[in-house]
Image 1 (spheres, rainbow, N blue to C red):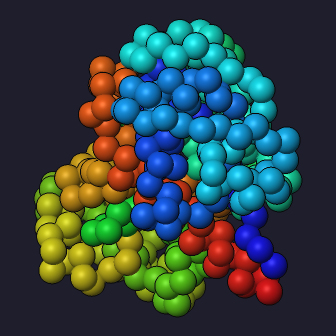
Image 2: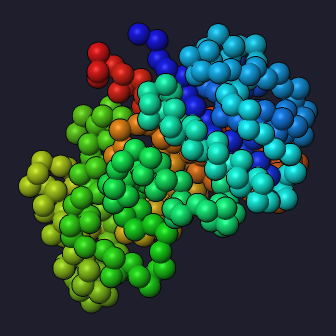
Image 3: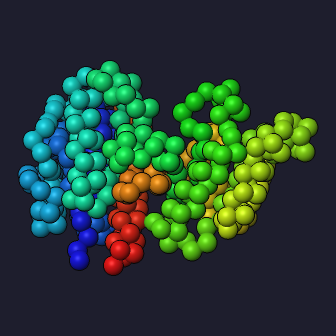
Length: 336
């Protein structure tokens, strides 16, 4: 059975998403990329491609199943929703186009017409202004799948590191109050299952960071490690999950340390994202674990200041496409 094509949402049309989609398609042959279709924004894509010196042929399709037949000759675009390409100039109309593309791409994937969804970067403040009520695209995709936000886990993945922030878009001051043993166990389970199912790791090794400097140093610098994190690790181990820690976060991301685990579970956003972006910025992928569908996204933002200037690197977009295809293929193989 042939793999279903991938669905790509446009992202904010004033950001770097459209030009990176065009760049990825232009390198499809040399990179052996799987077929993908973009949802809406045909005119935006053509103009964004021109900003990088690419003459982009576009093929209008009415069903994702038409993608493979067109992909070698033109970039398949599904849907007539479009907009004006104004790089760096975010607008309400652009946010509406981004939201329409995101909604349709997710719906097609939930329906099984697309094998996975790749979401390009959006401006959360712009989306909020047009009625988007979710903290980010991860929560939106989870809701579209009927999955509780707490069971949709964000993992950042690159060639050097996989990292999961257990608390995400919140104040650093709120982190100690949001961390609980149950939260760590719940998300640890999701991570372990997903690494086995989607990444083919038979016995995933989870390394959990401490919250405080030196992992609290036996309570001298905070007791969250002893009171919250260590009990969570013990419960995961009891369930047969290879979990270790709490590890001092300042040493866990060194080269030799990274060889001892498959994913690092960090206690807060920057504890996970700083090392990932330092090591793998141009190839980092945001993948949502715990969903009935595969969803990835390049791990960068809209980058409005450089949009349309030919400066944005397509590496993370290409990696997101490849990772989505690989995870979808593993799920399909498991289904037989």
